[in-house]
Image (cartoon, rainbow over all chains, first blue to last red; front, top):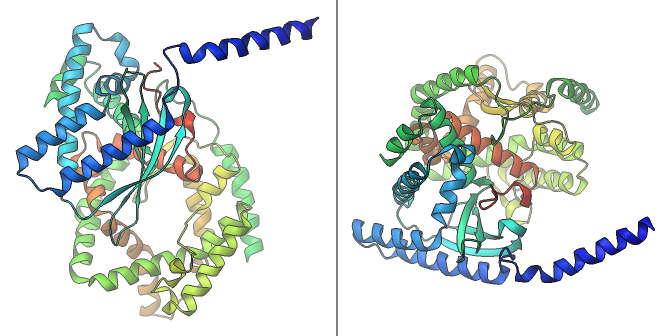
Length: 198
Length: 248
């Protein structure tokens, strides 16, 4: 009897599973995610290679960055447990400051082009977290840098939600940094946001 | 000697089981850091040491050493680590990797001018380092809390024990080269050259973390802990460790 119930339960789970693709939280398509990173990588290398004047290049980078990354969701994640204690106004102000901060730090870190290529080496399903696309940043004479891109379409569009460089997640590192920044300001979120805005 | 070291290693394994007892990380935090105050003080000291000694030494090394020599010195530093790597391959039960390490050591010693050159990589035997911290991880020892070591930098309870054991496993610990001044120089070189070479090889990124980040202690902690966990997982990404951006 017990076994029967269990089996029926299992069956109904399977039936639910068959319906799951209709649910909004369906898994991100692996091939589409891989394609997305390949296109984005080509675009990024292109921006780096065509050495346009500073401002023009920064603008191009910003456009690509806004289109490719799920900034609001990443921003929210980086606030960790603090997010829920923030007022809506604070959340909005933070997201604005977060974008400015992210653009500032990444524009600074995109250096000069030294013949690097981005080679996509694989992609794996990461369930609800999205699809993890693996790539190697190659340049002559130095070791490859392993870059993994977490891609998800749960914001509605296909977007990068994290970059993992040699095992170090940008989103997690950022979350640790922000937690420390808030703590250093005795939990004063407004001061943190003002300082983040720079 | 191997026998003795292995026995010592087992002893430390038991010790680390005691020392590395599980410490709960605060909710949402990457790792437990109960000694943060002490760690931060040590970190400040380390940054000062970098500013006044290691960083200038790396700049000087880069300036006076031709690229070819830098390459050979880098090779040699890696080469001297291979015995420790080999022992750890064995302790991890990875016979294939141990043979590869042995093969690499043989090839580069004989046809690589004693380790200055690296023909082994071309033969499909690339440098694939490991250490006793990773050996402990492979046997599911607890990671322990985050610890900032003086001069050695970021570590965990597990990795700190690993460092100690690796020192004991290293044949260089027991071998004396030459006598008098030569011996002194060899000993000094053993402890000073690898850090300078490593600092020089990663110059930009270390500068960024130590001098340009908002809170270099936290950035270093986050980067160290994650990259060590990735190494322990042999590059196989654990999906569960990825951030769940939409999850919280």
